[in-house]
Image (cartoon, rainbow over the protein chains, first blue to last red):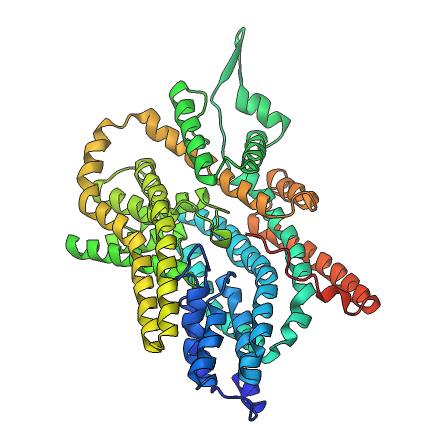
Length: 278
Length: 266
């Protein structure tokens, strides 16, 4: 892919392939580290663009003006940030300080849609699928799942490099080529996420009660005799519904809900209402 | 491996984890199963590391720091749990009982760090205006160093003082308590699931949620199989909707460029 870049090199190109790669690395190895509540990932953006922009703007004043632009609010899934930064780099390299406003609007207009895809893929789909596979393997003392996970994430380095180059070669065209399509993609991929989540409710969530009803001589187990007869995973589904509802309330954070569940389980274990699932 | 060297390596792993998870690499990330394996490797008992890591992995499924939101530090919980289980011989239930609270307390460091980073961000921009360009890098490295401290501080405390405390606690923890935590371990994945459902368009695609549930609960298809069916559905929907999009674009050529990117959600 770097060959393609060299072929289209013309007089407007001020950066070498090596310098661009260095910028990519500065971003991917720092993306969320400067994270703050005011400008979020902006310090990392400034850090990663600093050297490449210096080459583009030898004039101190222009350089400061251009860098100031990158200290503004920025937040994107780190893996997808490459695309945006690649595109802004190409724009600034081509048009210099004149591109300042265009750079800013490209950044703000693309970070939402790209985070939508990035979060779905890198934070939800992959870790959820791989996590449940590797997690169950690990419970049996099998490390293969965890090792494959690491190997895939190491391999992603080159995918991210490709994304960076995609952004760089597209430049301003990025908004028109990706723009609306990316939202369609995020929307579609969420069906995959929802199917996986639906499956997890019945396989990963475990609620079990050892309670028994004594009617005359016959003991009826509440779990196997009633709940499982109605529907497999009846209690997990009810619990999932409850948590979903609670999360919609402003006063309930995930951490509070985790504490609530732990308390319920302790009480349940003490009174014998809840038991360890078999 | 000597005890001293193990301690150092565990603390270094915590530092690496903080760095790796804050970047776009996430090779170890905060993923409990990977961290558990690595701590197990350092401590000389990979099996214990995998079992505790795997348990915490399943507990934390779907709990993701989307848009930089703060969630319990399951990676820290894993390091603490595996470290103490191997040192003291505590059971998986007890290890998680000790690890999880530390992971939740570490969350507070995360919030503090993001406030401190604000100060670093302004410092770095001030240096830019003073034309001390090279120093910007050094301020950033300082940020990274502080960022690592958010994991290094709690883990160091646990490494130094955790073992005797846990050994003392082991004798007084009643069985119902560790059982209760094991039960909680089975129930907690529901929090991640709830968070995912809040993030995704449940009402629009309820069909697929139900399909996924039925495929797993009744038909017993493994998760990868269900993901593939979901992928097929996603592909069909994408094809359909992007075709619709190009048709619409053909009708109204330039009116759809103005409303992009306004659905940015945290």
